[in-house]
Length: 133
Image 1 (cartoon, rainbow, N blue to C red):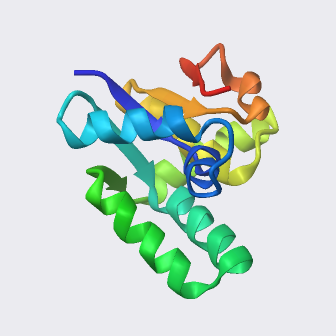
Image 2: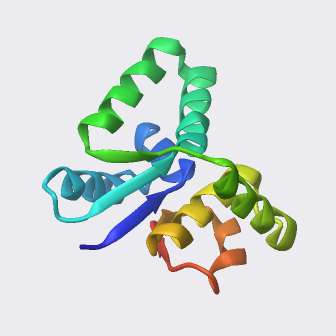
């Protein structure tokens, strides 16, 4: 079964109804049907939450998190070793710190990153990327 790692860009674009939203919805609905697995680190989920809360308020952010859970997105907790794997990506690739967690998750799970954030070009040689736009 295919595995995908979400960065915050993908979910924020979904909730803001941006051009990539229909593709993100397809992946979310397929995960709900058990056709593949979707994962997100708690760091990236936190980034989604604070982005939505800062723009639309706490209640909208809470509703967004409940919707993410309803789509069967699996949350990946961070431990020391994982944090250091992400830190190494930050030190060697210059990717945004939160994005490093999504890339490290893809490495750990042998998953494909779902994103439209072009900064991930910096790690295309390390992890597969599914470009949403």
